Length: 416
Image 1 (cartoon, rainbow, N blue to C red):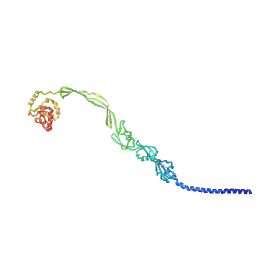
Image 2 (cartoon, helix red, strand yellow):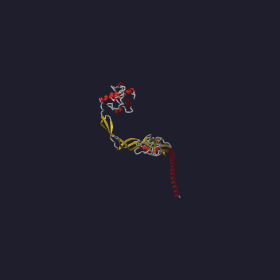
Image 3 (cartoon, one colour):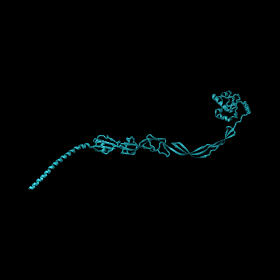
Image 4 (spheres, rainbow, N blue to C red):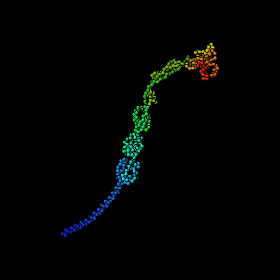
């Protein structure tokens, strides 16, 4: 009984010593947990206050993030967004972050840009092809673009633009305006529906670039061979003949021109001949030589007996001598007629009426009018003549008659 009582007592003591520390530790634990909970409750407000939701859009791609950063730069750095000095950031990188703020980043992108065949070194902050072209001032309305206007742009993007232009095409006598996104002259010609011949040419090379307002002229070129007949002039040989009077000619052998067939290479531009080159030729009819005989015989001098006899004849006639004989000494009657201009000439008519072409004629009714034009001696001297007109050459008589006509008119001769 004692032992049992003693055991119980000992156990009580044991538990008593155990319970007391346990209770003491439990209180400490409760206090510690209270401190932690209090700390956690107090820190939640700070956590919530510092962790802000922010909308970040990079090159058109939007994402909502939560950040403890105080500036825009902090937010972007936290998102591993590396910035270039050309990049656009809105608002500025030093702006303080607020809840639900919108941060927009447009990265700089280098472009492999070609406009109307001309390479251009450009860059852009735009997100799409259309925005980039608008920012660079490149008119894309009606243009041909190698990428869709709403396509996203990446760094090093290749864009080929052919702008719309109005070009006037002149061909076949007509001017046609062409409105198209054309890069070269060939593109414009094709758009106009004009077919070029093998030899046709244009005012600008077909491969050259075109510009707005340009005029392109199409020239129709024709290269062809033409066969034509040409005249081969006959050769004329002149032979001297002392038996014919000087100045007289006659045809001894009649000649004839020949013919030749010539082939030419002819080039025409818009119908106008611009060059001609002889390719070949052949005679189809030979020319025949003509022989002409020309007299060299000097006129015979009048003998004194002939002159005396002639004077007697003149004195015996009732008017001007109308003989067709050679009275000129140095000129035949035919030559005098030719000098006066031949039939139809007024001088010819006057000389025929007054003296019948006899430069030594004397008017037998009054013996006061002399020579081809029946001068009075006083009139003869008034026009510079000396002596008697019949002693002057036919040429001098004609010269003095023209002086008289100029001074006094045609009324000096009733036959005029």
